[in-house]
Image 1 (cartoon, rainbow, N blue to C red):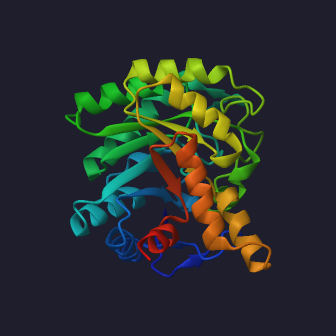
Image 2: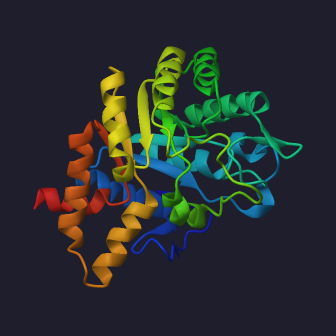
Image 3: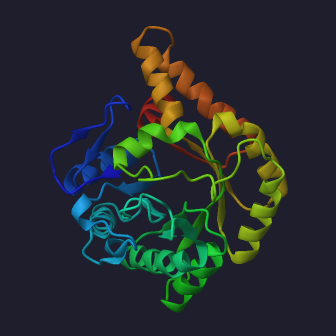
Length: 291
């Protein structure tokens, strides 16, 4: 779910039916989802430009947007699993997932910031922190910081195999988090490379990840199956914004039955090996499964 400061909903043009929500609207939407059987929500903050800087300082603000949203959700729905995103891009004036130094991503400079961000989210009440940044060593840094801060029970869902995909466009529009210069191909994975996934899985598993994430979903179902075979950890798949938007757009044109296509898409991800599925169609799917 996308959360913003203003309580008035802001439509997201390329993701029909979805919007950025204020904290009160977020709680209402989460209640609706939870009542339908959706057990967890993943939060992504749309931060105002005035709060962005090169080192994402707003990400650790205890009174920041995301932290307030987590607190509100846990107060209203204590049994709801709240998952928070750990990456610099929503807070960065550069729009990258790590710190930009002299035009290059500095992996090691980014790690303490990511670890502090995860601790701030855990202090607010997050059940699962989900580093999506793809910096090397960040799972170990986050696990160590969480444990030192007394948050041993907070889980880490590592975006372990996250590809430099064209399917993220609507998401980046929603958060205004596209890179201001360059791209993310130096730290996200090459779509042509499947061999690297084995190293990424082994490293994150050894560093203390509790879940492993494959992103995107359907176009990378072969990767999902390989990851499922490579680790005993729970494996999540992210049915990303581009995939969801294509279903909605095609159904609005009359080219596809959205309900049937959504359930088939999620079934395919489950068949490929997903234990957990992140999808913008979760509420729709829950209604359909219930009926």
